[in-house]
Length: 436
Ligand SMILES: [Zn+2]
Picture 1: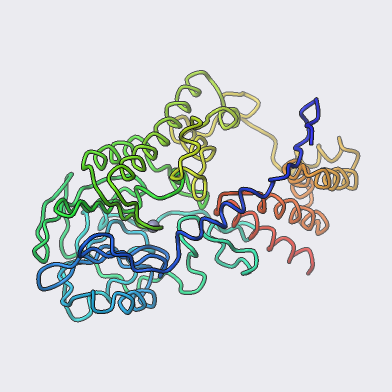
Picture 2: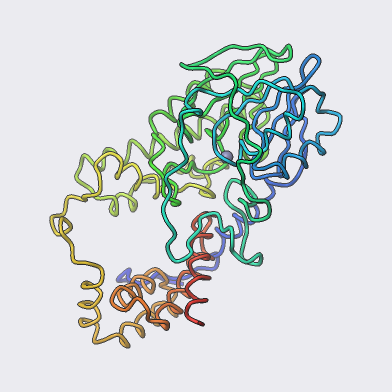
């Protein structure tokens, strides 16, 4: 199909669902398996929202991360079977996220292990997050099964067994500063503070086995620098520095917090290098654009990965996206104002909506235009037009139904799981309201 010469339409193409199908194919990363990564080191992948790593030592074991809850943890203990040699001498948390720290009690059993983390884990509070709005949920927790694909870095996030704090055990031993060498069950381990995906993220380095456990500082997706569930920017400079530290280790195996491990020295180096460069280029381009006076809306049209990086299997936008990284960096560095004085004191959404309806010749006309846009597959424009209606008339049920249609179409064309989930959960909510 040839695009309009005016460039005003968003033409469909044969592969308009290619992103969704790529996302669907990525679920293979979450297939259930206990993988022997190297002698004495096992990763339980796909049993919970996150991976659990078992390190066999002398007269006991070490566990790194503990899954999302006691139910998942019990399934993983079963799956490890006799490979889990009791007693568990120590449990290490790479970070505090509930999908990694919710099953510790099950692994500890009656063994009374040391519980180890960086000191910042103890000091970290719960994430702030955004309140609910029209049912939007990046993890798709309540999305109907036929529409749910995955949650980006995990098959599902709390859809079957919710994350709980029931199984959490507070650290009994923490370290401050950059790194600490410890011996656990006869295994020499280095803990390295590597702020990135979380401020407390700790990499676990077992030099004797060439095994690097980077926590969530590396995942097989473009990093989620500025998650749409509503969090502060994850500082990209610190993240880049942490990846440099991990690269310097020259690991042979990398077992990150989600998805299947990365195997082989060259592959680990490629993965960490792509990841670092993928963050750094977006940071550099965004800051240069900000210095040129560009707005975030303009920058998302310009900032791109190089063609080589865009092809990297480690930078596909299943979880984070380049555009959201740009927006997060912009807001963090220069705040909310885009430099255009029109936007210093804009109209209220309701007033703008009423004025736009007047301009369009009334509500019915605007609704019709939105429907035409959707029929022409210009779904974003359809959603934007219908938002003027809903700003002026928040309870307009016909408008809600049309918005649901636009969001469904947008959701079905995403490669990003959190975008898909957010579009489709909101659509589900609006279409239910419009039927009531
Ligand atoms: Zn995680």
